[in-house]
Image (cartoon, rainbow, N blue to C red; front, side, top):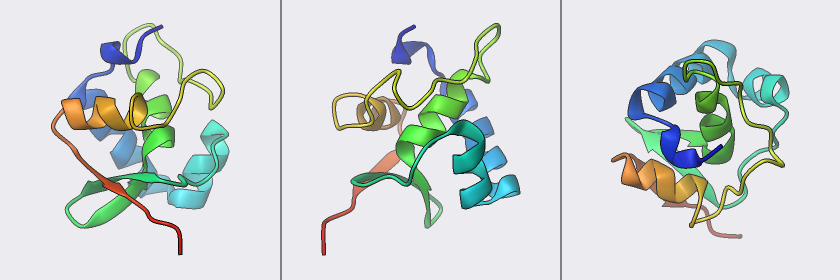
Amino acid sequence: MTLNEITRSAILQAVAEYDRLGRDAFLERYGFGPSRSYLLEIEGKEYDSKAIVGAAHGYLSGRDPLGRDEFSGGKDHAAKLLSDLGFEVVVRTAG
């Protein structure tokens, strides 16, 4: 498994599912907690970046969603993937 297999289309499919289910149900379905630092932003809406990436992996042919312990959500992993795919990633600061 490598995160670089995940496509922009798969991310958008995961975002659509997040919108359909709502945040709490989406996070519960995939076993993620809320993002602490990095958020995906699309059209003014914020999404939990690591949960979106994990779910997006399941939209790839023959793949299952990734669990929270299977990859990092940090700036060098999920957030970087999203940026590399042309998405805006915002950093949530403490306080």
